[in-house]
Image (cartoon, rainbow, N blue to C red; front, side, top):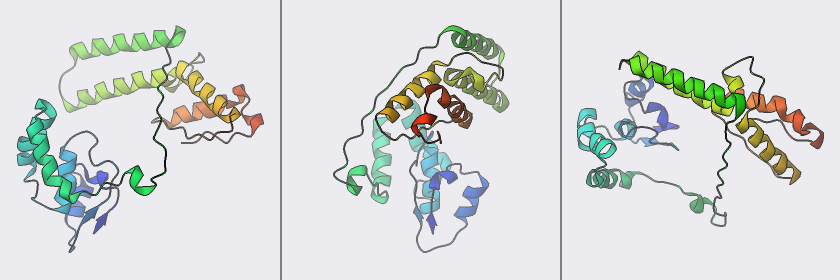
Length: 222
Protein backbone atom coordinates (compact mmCIF):
# COMPACT_ATOMS: atom_id res chain seq x y z
CA UNK A 1 0.00 0.00 0.00
CA UNK A 2 1.52 3.28 -1.14
CA UNK A 3 0.03 6.42 0.36
CA UNK A 4 0.80 9.42 -1.86
CA UNK A 5 0.48 12.96 -0.45
CA UNK A 6 0.54 11.38 3.01
CA UNK A 7 0.13 14.75 4.73
CA UNK A 8 -3.60 14.33 4.09
CA UNK A 9 -3.73 11.86 6.97
CA UNK A 10 -2.01 14.20 9.44
CA UNK A 11 -5.26 14.51 11.40
CA UNK A 12 -5.63 11.09 13.05
CA UNK A 13 -9.34 11.58 13.71
CA UNK A 14 -10.22 12.53 10.13
CA UNK A 15 -12.30 10.07 8.09
CA UNK A 16 -9.56 9.63 5.47
CA UNK A 17 -7.01 8.78 8.19
CA UNK A 18 -9.31 6.15 9.67
CA UNK A 19 -9.99 4.73 6.21
CA UNK A 20 -6.34 4.21 5.22
CA UNK A 21 -5.56 2.57 8.56
CA UNK A 22 -8.04 -0.11 7.57
CA UNK A 23 -6.07 -1.08 4.46
CA UNK A 24 -4.42 -4.48 4.81
CA UNK A 25 -1.16 -4.95 2.91
CA UNK A 26 2.17 -6.74 3.33
CA UNK A 27 4.08 -3.46 3.16
CA UNK A 28 3.18 0.18 3.69
CA UNK A 29 4.84 3.24 2.17
CA UNK A 30 4.07 6.93 2.59
CA UNK A 31 5.17 9.69 0.21
CA UNK A 32 5.02 13.32 1.30
CA UNK A 33 6.87 16.56 0.88
CA UNK A 34 5.62 17.91 4.21
CA UNK A 35 5.54 15.21 6.92
CA UNK A 36 5.24 17.89 9.60
CA UNK A 37 3.53 21.23 9.00
CA UNK A 38 2.32 22.36 12.41
CA UNK A 39 2.53 19.66 15.10
CA UNK A 40 4.55 16.53 15.81
CA UNK A 41 1.28 14.63 16.06
CA UNK A 42 1.15 14.82 12.25
CA UNK A 43 4.24 12.62 12.11
CA UNK A 44 2.62 10.19 14.54
CA UNK A 45 -0.45 9.93 12.33
CA UNK A 46 1.63 9.01 9.25
CA UNK A 47 3.60 6.42 11.22
CA UNK A 48 0.36 5.01 12.58
CA UNK A 49 -0.45 4.07 8.98
CA UNK A 50 3.06 2.74 8.32
CA UNK A 51 3.81 0.94 11.57
CA UNK A 52 0.87 0.97 14.00
CA UNK A 53 2.09 1.15 17.60
CA UNK A 54 5.70 1.90 16.73
CA UNK A 55 5.40 5.44 18.11
CA UNK A 56 3.15 4.27 20.97
CA UNK A 57 -0.42 5.46 21.34
CA UNK A 58 -1.29 9.03 20.47
CA UNK A 59 -1.46 10.05 24.14
CA UNK A 60 1.86 8.35 24.96
CA UNK A 61 3.51 9.99 21.95
CA UNK A 62 2.25 13.37 23.12
CA UNK A 63 3.61 12.77 26.63
CA UNK A 64 6.97 11.34 25.53
CA UNK A 65 7.74 13.60 22.55
CA UNK A 66 5.26 16.23 21.41
CA UNK A 67 4.92 18.16 24.67
CA UNK A 68 8.64 17.97 25.63
CA UNK A 69 9.82 18.95 22.14
CA UNK A 70 7.22 21.53 21.13
CA UNK A 71 6.60 23.22 24.46
CA UNK A 72 9.80 22.63 26.43
CA UNK A 73 12.35 22.48 23.58
CA UNK A 74 13.69 19.26 25.09
CA UNK A 75 16.68 18.42 22.88
CA UNK A 76 17.08 14.93 24.35
CA UNK A 77 13.47 14.02 23.50
CA UNK A 78 13.95 15.41 20.00
CA UNK A 79 17.05 13.28 19.48
CA UNK A 80 15.28 10.17 20.75
CA UNK A 81 12.44 10.68 18.32
CA UNK A 82 14.84 11.32 15.46
CA UNK A 83 16.75 8.13 16.27
CA UNK A 84 13.51 6.14 16.20
CA UNK A 85 12.10 7.41 12.89
CA UNK A 86 15.20 8.22 10.80
CA UNK A 87 15.94 4.57 9.83
CA UNK A 88 12.53 4.45 8.15
CA UNK A 89 12.70 7.78 6.31
CA UNK A 90 14.32 8.14 2.90
CA UNK A 91 14.74 11.82 2.14
CA UNK A 92 15.67 12.87 -1.37
CA UNK A 93 17.59 16.11 -1.54
CA UNK A 94 18.20 18.32 -4.52
CA UNK A 95 21.82 17.21 -4.78
CA UNK A 96 20.74 13.57 -4.95
CA UNK A 97 18.79 14.25 -8.14
CA UNK A 98 21.05 16.61 -10.07
CA UNK A 99 24.46 17.25 -8.58
CA UNK A 100 25.24 20.16 -10.89
CA UNK A 101 22.27 22.28 -9.77
CA UNK A 102 23.35 25.65 -8.33
CA UNK A 103 22.53 26.59 -4.77
CA UNK A 104 19.20 28.27 -4.19
CA UNK A 105 19.44 32.05 -3.97
CA UNK A 106 16.97 33.88 -1.79
CA UNK A 107 16.30 37.59 -1.73
CA UNK A 108 13.88 39.18 0.70
CA UNK A 109 12.26 42.44 -0.31
CA UNK A 110 10.20 44.57 2.04
CA UNK A 111 7.27 46.72 0.99
CA UNK A 112 6.26 49.36 3.54
CA UNK A 113 2.56 50.10 3.93
CA UNK A 114 1.67 53.74 3.38
CA UNK A 115 -1.29 56.05 3.08
CA UNK A 116 -4.75 54.53 2.89
CA UNK A 117 -3.43 50.97 3.03
CA UNK A 118 -1.61 51.74 6.28
CA UNK A 119 -4.73 53.31 7.79
CA UNK A 120 -6.83 50.26 6.94
CA UNK A 121 -4.22 47.95 8.44
CA UNK A 122 -3.96 49.98 11.67
CA UNK A 123 -7.75 50.08 11.97
CA UNK A 124 -7.89 46.31 11.61
CA UNK A 125 -5.22 45.92 14.31
CA UNK A 126 -7.25 48.11 16.69
CA UNK A 127 -10.39 46.08 15.94
CA UNK A 128 -8.55 42.83 16.56
CA UNK A 129 -7.15 44.04 19.89
CA UNK A 130 -10.62 44.98 21.06
CA UNK A 131 -11.88 41.56 20.05
CA UNK A 132 -9.03 39.79 21.88
CA UNK A 133 -9.77 41.67 25.10
CA UNK A 134 -13.24 40.14 25.30
CA UNK A 135 -12.89 36.81 23.52
CA UNK A 136 -12.98 33.42 25.21
CA UNK A 137 -11.10 30.20 24.52
CA UNK A 138 -13.73 28.12 22.74
CA UNK A 139 -12.95 26.54 19.40
CA UNK A 140 -15.31 28.89 17.60
CA UNK A 141 -13.64 31.96 19.07
CA UNK A 142 -10.18 30.65 18.16
CA UNK A 143 -11.41 30.40 14.57
CA UNK A 144 -12.46 34.04 14.80
CA UNK A 145 -8.90 34.96 15.77
CA UNK A 146 -7.48 33.04 12.82
CA UNK A 147 -9.96 34.78 10.53
CA UNK A 148 -8.81 38.17 11.80
CA UNK A 149 -5.15 37.26 11.27
CA UNK A 150 -5.96 36.18 7.72
CA UNK A 151 -7.71 39.50 7.20
CA UNK A 152 -4.55 41.36 8.29
CA UNK A 153 -2.47 39.33 5.85
CA UNK A 154 -4.89 40.09 3.04
CA UNK A 155 -4.72 43.81 3.76
CA UNK A 156 -0.93 43.57 3.58
CA UNK A 157 -1.19 41.94 0.16
CA UNK A 158 -3.88 44.25 -1.18
CA UNK A 159 -6.77 45.86 0.73
CA UNK A 160 -8.96 45.12 -2.30
CA UNK A 161 -8.94 41.47 -1.16
CA UNK A 162 -10.98 42.56 1.86
CA UNK A 163 -12.71 45.76 0.75
CA UNK A 164 -14.48 45.36 -2.57
CA UNK A 165 -14.66 49.11 -3.26
CA UNK A 166 -10.97 49.76 -2.48
CA UNK A 167 -9.24 51.54 -5.37
CA UNK A 168 -6.11 52.76 -3.63
CA UNK A 169 -2.50 51.60 -3.93
CA UNK A 170 -1.01 48.36 -2.63
CA UNK A 171 2.67 48.37 -1.70
CA UNK A 172 3.07 44.63 -2.14
CA UNK A 173 1.21 44.55 -5.44
CA UNK A 174 3.32 47.39 -6.82
CA UNK A 175 6.55 45.76 -5.65
CA UNK A 176 5.54 42.43 -7.18
CA UNK A 177 4.72 43.92 -10.58
CA UNK A 178 8.00 45.84 -10.64
CA UNK A 179 9.84 42.54 -10.14
CA UNK A 180 7.75 40.92 -12.87
CA UNK A 181 8.43 43.78 -15.28
CA UNK A 182 12.16 43.70 -14.57
CA UNK A 183 12.33 39.93 -15.03
CA UNK A 184 10.45 40.00 -18.33
CA UNK A 185 12.67 42.76 -19.67
CA UNK A 186 15.60 40.50 -18.86
CA UNK A 187 13.88 37.64 -20.73
CA UNK A 188 13.48 35.54 -17.60
CA UNK A 189 10.58 33.29 -16.65
CA UNK A 190 8.73 33.47 -13.36
CA UNK A 191 6.43 31.46 -11.15
CA UNK A 192 4.31 33.52 -8.78
CA UNK A 193 2.74 31.83 -5.77
CA UNK A 194 0.15 33.20 -3.39
CA UNK A 195 -2.04 31.64 -0.74
CA UNK A 196 -4.80 33.92 -1.99
CA UNK A 197 -5.95 33.10 -5.52
CA UNK A 198 -7.77 36.42 -5.58
CA UNK A 199 -4.39 38.15 -5.24
CA UNK A 200 -3.29 36.46 -8.46
CA UNK A 201 -6.43 37.75 -10.11
CA UNK A 202 -5.54 41.28 -9.00
CA UNK A 203 -2.07 40.93 -10.51
CA UNK A 204 -3.62 39.66 -13.74
CA UNK A 205 -5.81 42.75 -13.98
CA UNK A 206 -3.06 45.31 -13.37
CA UNK A 207 -0.45 43.85 -15.74
CA UNK A 208 -1.63 46.06 -18.62
CA UNK A 209 -0.63 49.09 -16.55
CA UNK A 210 2.98 47.96 -16.85
CA UNK A 211 2.78 47.27 -20.58
CA UNK A 212 3.39 43.57 -20.05
CA UNK A 213 0.83 42.50 -22.63
CA UNK A 214 2.69 44.25 -25.41
CA UNK A 215 5.84 42.32 -24.56
CA UNK A 216 4.27 38.91 -24.98
CA UNK A 217 4.25 38.13 -21.28
CA UNK A 218 2.26 35.03 -20.29
CA UNK A 219 -0.65 35.24 -17.94
CA UNK A 220 0.07 35.44 -14.25
CA UNK A 221 -0.90 32.02 -12.96
CA UNK A 222 -0.70 30.17 -9.68
